[in-house]
Image 1 (spheres, rainbow, N blue to C red):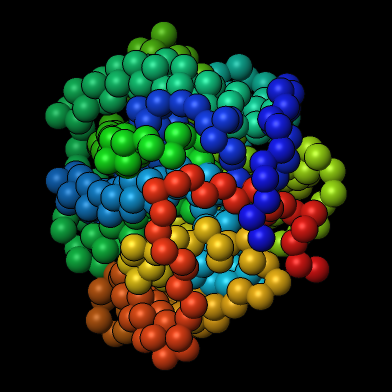
Image 2 (cartoon, rainbow, N blue to C red; image 1 turned 135 degrees about the vertical axis):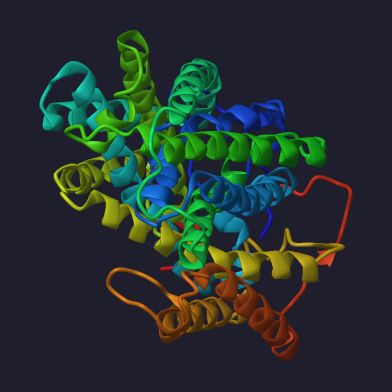
Length: 475
């Protein structure tokens, strides 16, 4: 049911959970989304996608550039589209996906995103930030990890406004430092030597496109988490453009730098140290610091949105600071996972597999939610989202599982499993695109066949949905 919004309260720590944001608490400029989605990509995890394209997938620099541009363009396009959904209902992305999956069925994508965001990406980015801080200061990795984790968990614990302010100012500082580093690295490419065997292998090309897509689209399930505070009448075109452009530019520039760095790479003690070896000392130190700060910027979003996804799965937590408490819990658990990633000798293989696995589930999820939104065009979904007791839509879970399972079975190209089509054709990895198409088609058919309930007539009046709260969720 729709409830009357309570009077807003001002607290240092953002209270509440996944309830809709009332109109009198809406604020912010759509262009702040450019910084929000630039800062978290200005880190070494982004650089590493380009690095593995050349060093492990066998691409030449031009081939790697084209591959990352395609992958990032696809992931950034959907980032922009999904970002425009937040202002209308004032809800987080994994809450909005209830229309496509039903309340109970939505537990599946919400749980997956909780693990991927709050734990998987947390470990990945914490590892890169820790290695940078350790290389910069010479401190033990475990101590550097503690510092990184404490800062990023603190940001997410306080909540949305502090995270947005941090991303805004970090984007300026990180952008300047990384721009200088990229210019120096590209200037050294001409004096280096092309890696042996680098060329245009089709399999390596599709692997790189999928890895880049997995990275850029990895932010898709968070998109409206950071636009739900925008005014309902905000210019959606500007908002979507700002979000998508910030994601695309930051990912593409750093991935190209990563690919170029292989031509001048020095075998240092860890990949991060190797990346900055060709830089002058002053810029090397600044870049290491920027890599650390960028990892913190990324994980502030991962922890915040991971907590939102956790609540969207229907977990009952009665405390007013439930989102903040969950963020703190993720920090404790994520620390030990990140510690294992830091000492992992096969970080390259692990990271490659992680990027592809992200794309494997996000692509069919996108196929479902985009088709669902298209089929509901011209209708209001306000009544569907809080209807936790009765609303069911099993077309979504079925399409997600079927599309994902079939595409992984046939086309997956992982170190631990290679599908029969990928093995016999050398196609590389096109699993995400097959999964997207299959899930979209299956959902379209089931939506019609099961006669899924549409929303009511679309109204120009604000439709605030504040009855959604973890304390009122299903058991």
